[in-house]
Length: 115
Image 1 (cartoon, rainbow, N blue to C red):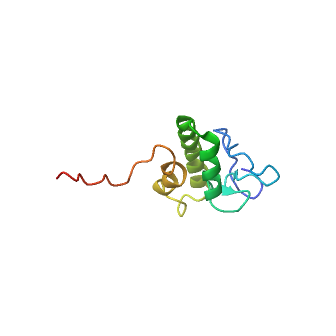
Image 2: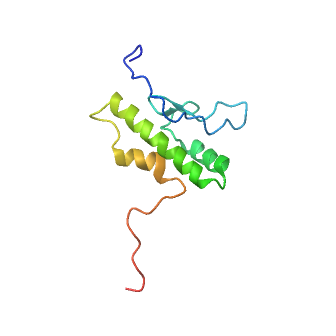
Image 3: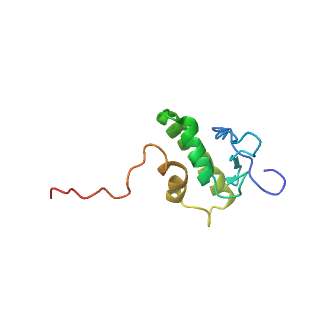
């Protein structure tokens, strides 16, 4: 634990993306272990971070999916330790970190139009 009672983040994937854009602005990176955006204060990944991540990773969709999945795992650990009773559910965190990414599937399979 660090001063103030917050847990020390683990040494999982380091959230070093997206890079700052424009370069003179604060990057939309998370403040750990709270997982809030350093630039705008919204839950990370904020809308700007998502857009910048999609641009930065471009055609490297597998890399983006792996990056987001690793951060989902780290955020789940950090946020559960901060507040195990009232924190976000695993499903909410999955939707926040992974579901918007390149390999998302609909929550309900679309109806077969031939039936």
